[in-house]
Length: 98
Image (cartoon, rainbow, N blue to C red):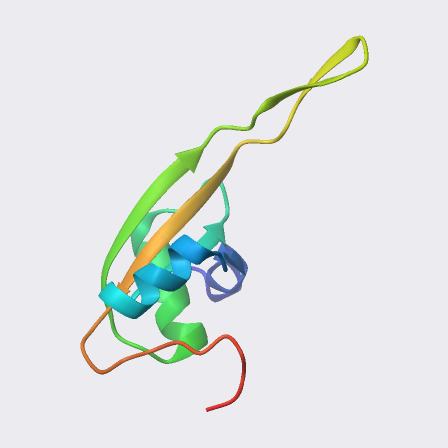
């Protein structure tokens, strides 16, 4: 796998009530990833960027919503999210303070 591609796989962490609860209870973290990303690529990207050991990766395709703007109809872009389960004793801190 190309090192440059690995660095672009993760777009952003998903920080919400659900993802915070998953992180606290199951050591699972949610990320918005590239639409064509695969599980091995997501695993390598998380291990490289956060220096942690990944146990598993689950990927979900999220379909964009259809929205109306007056008479015109538009559609939000489809995107992909990944739930990454970390090994025991590993953690990711998005706030920066340790």
